[in-house]
Amino acid sequence: MKTVLVMRHAKSDWGNPDLADFDRPLNTRGERDAPRMGTLLKEEDRRPDMIMASAARRAQQTAEAVAAAIEYPGQIEARAALYGSGAVSYLEAIRGLPDEVGRVLVVGHNPSVEELVGVLTGTAVTMPTATVVQVDLPIRRWREVGQGARGSVVGVWRPKELG
Image (cartoon, rainbow, N blue to C red):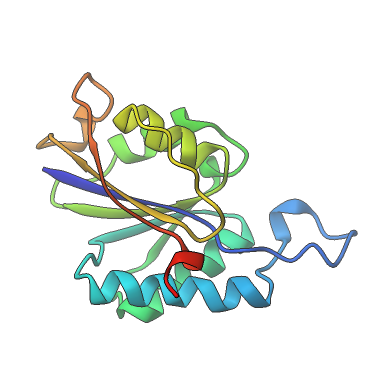
């Protein structure tokens, strides 16, 4: 069994109209919600073996905040292919993971992260900013992702529902 924690980046700042979309940082709410979701993953004993995130600033900041909260010892893999792309790019990135990774956290953007959950499970999940969805996959090797075996949505955590 392999597990993918799919996370939409936390809320970003739209205050500077001259800033390119790729370079938008988190806003105050995003800076609050990202570490809260990391704390939840730590408390629920759902720490990933690996974190990969879109190279966009807001996704990187989200991944860094989660990593700090869970005391993640590794490097965050920045993936340019996860910015401005669809679920296929996410699937390709996941298929290329080393098999010793049992649980990966993928931080990305909508609508791609919702599409990814749909492709992996056949289930539609609404993912507001900073939402985490756990998908368990009945596979032994990452290259098997998307080859017929459907995963299961095991949990959905949204910041507004944490209280």
